[in-house]
Length: 233
Image (cartoon, rainbow, N blue to C red; front, side, top):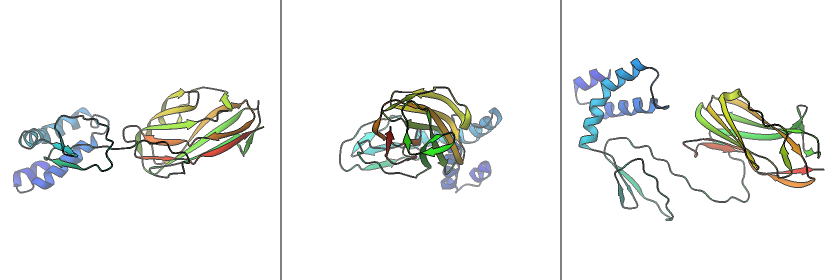
């Protein structure tokens, strides 16, 4: 169909959209198989090269001209003005970081909830010396690739077990002193459960920072639990 439209002429806007679609489908760095890759490249590559030679992409950020990609920068201005020239597609991501002393629950691409349980029964208060399970449920609104799930642990607890789990396309766990980072190649649409085995050690009142799930390469697509308090007696 792409070749038919190109031969017919007068369809440049539609052809540009189709090229963008094919490039967007190359999410993991490749298409589905070698044959499909060869067919797509044979069809659109000449137009992409011609397009880049005639009208390469240029980005302006607060008047600064950017022509070399990938490009990374940190901006402190209150107002940021961004514009693009050229037909070549550019993938752009922007985010900000700050300390949030009272984080609330956010349900975006992911809806995240956490609960402590003992023998599959939810509990509100932990007992020192008695192992518990911290269960985090991630409800993905849509299928997402390369997802990072971060599960903080209370300061009064240590790990009872650090075994790797393989559900939910999980490929690796990293156990830090304050959190567990879980890496998944893909989370399909629906609910996914992650568990952490903990051992409460010190009595008192502690904060449980929000568990969150985010796309590793597009962290603005995320979701998190609210800040909670944990009591250990």
